[in-house]
Length: 326
Length: 259
Ligand SMILES: Cc1cc2nc3c(=O)[nH]c(=O)nc-3n(C[C@H](O)[C@H](O)[C@H](O)COP(=O)(O)OP(=O)(O)OC[C@H]3O[C@@H](n4cnc5c(N)ncnc54)[C@H](O)[C@@H]3O)c2cc1C
Ligand SMILES: Nc1ncnc2c1ncn2[C@@H]1O[C@H](COP(=O)(O)O)[C@@H](O)[C@H]1O
Image 1 (tube, rainbow over the protein chains, first blue to last red):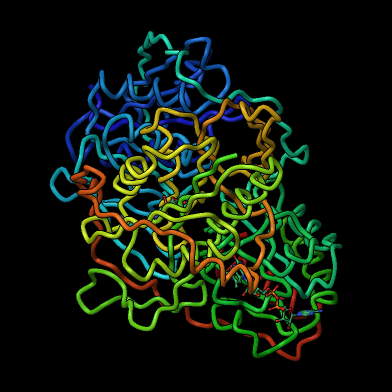
Image 2 (cartoon, helix red, strand yellow):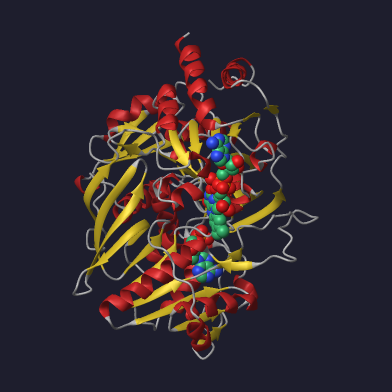
């Protein structure tokens, strides 16, 4: 029986990187508690991913493959997860704070009569109590949380916890479970994923963001920069750019958009309002390009360039191309 | 079309958050409170549904201290019909499980086709209450919704929802819980006549005992801290664009080691 259980999310036929982050963290917690680390995979054929999880320290992989679990849906997945947790009684359950995690974790917790500390950026143990540090007010402050019910459920922010390879057996346990389809749920009609195949802002390692200073909907320069970095980069925007209709709502970074924690955040033509800074202030490295030397973004930027972005970004892209080709 | 809108009052996004002396929470003096922006989208959408079906009701459910009446009145001024205010110190800690339990209890006895929550409250940032509420009421949830289309017979709803890298379209039977995401709509402002009318609209004040609840928190939060202060780094001014770009790109590789 695993003391720590992680939920490994599968998306578009692949395990999400955030699942390996959970496994690495889960491994450390399981070692401290002196127990096993389990991972649960949901969906037909999901057991194929067991070897990948084993690499990151998972002792036991539970796969629940009922045919009704082919497509994600909150009620059925929550039933499956609840079943496994009731059965194996882990002390700690870790999930990712992804779109799916936000949908699934609280529903599962409500079924189990427990709570979720969501969007944690670090964990520690106090005895057998899991303490999760989580940003609040989109990062304007932090607090340490714990769950006083069983199991202790937490979701972790993607891209923050370190991965570490620790080979373990990853032995597969198939779990048979029949979904109660009498409970009403939704059905997916159309999954119109972006064809560009770009990572989501919340999962990107590098974000190139443009604000009102872009002057219009033409973001070619920034798309180009993200393109140079490749699939780990994506383009974001300030609310001013979104409200002007230049960018999609889902591109907005900030307190009322997405809170992001990339390794590198490049802000172009963004002044650095309190709401914007809240959402990206915990990026590891911030670069700002702005023509106003007094722009507040410079007080947070590790590297600032004062000047016209339309002159600087093309040069920046050239330099990037050269250095990344080395 | 009858909607319940779960509405939280939160500090204005302009607020500079400060942690109190013993780290048990934030300093609340002088904070200006507003409706959680996502809950504003919910109010707007509920009003549009009522207008579309030319019948129905929009009821606001709020848990929180006395000051929250202001937020309820603002929603009533936008056009909502009445409010239920659960005002009780025992449920002021914002624990999503307790919020969901209390909202579920407050909704019993009310008629509804749909329940709106915000996808997250921008103070505690839990993003949990909607899904927990749906589970407690044993109805489906559709989270992170940017478009809502209710069928003429009011039996089903089709929603567009955000997923990583795109959108998906899902359909479900009503009643259900939807959680509002930015992009759903542009909330209206309260009109002057709306503000006048709102003063006469009913707001029922309830305690937890009235709802037959004895809620127990599932979460404890403490050791509040401020983020590490980011120091301004290097600022390059007056360099030629090519030179500035070169210096920074090189620093990103050799100094910051992020590329
Ligand atoms: C309730 C509420 C919630 C909000 N939530 C968010 C949120 O989540 N995210 C968010 O971003 N904002 C949010 N805002 C808006 C926020 O207050 C700011 O208005 C917004 O962030 C400003 O965007 P900006 O920096 O792109 O525009 P501006 O503040 O107008 O800044 C534009 C910058 O571009 C620079 N510039 C112009 N031309 C050039 C050029 N050619 N080259 C280089 N630099 C140039 C200017 O010097 C200026 O600094 C919110 C506001 C409210 C009221
Ligand atoms: N105190 C409250 N009163 C009414 N609704 C609430 C309250 N707390 C949370 N909610 C609802 O739940 C949503 C998500 O909140 P949270 O789970 O705290 O991020 C909010 O947008 C509201 O719709």
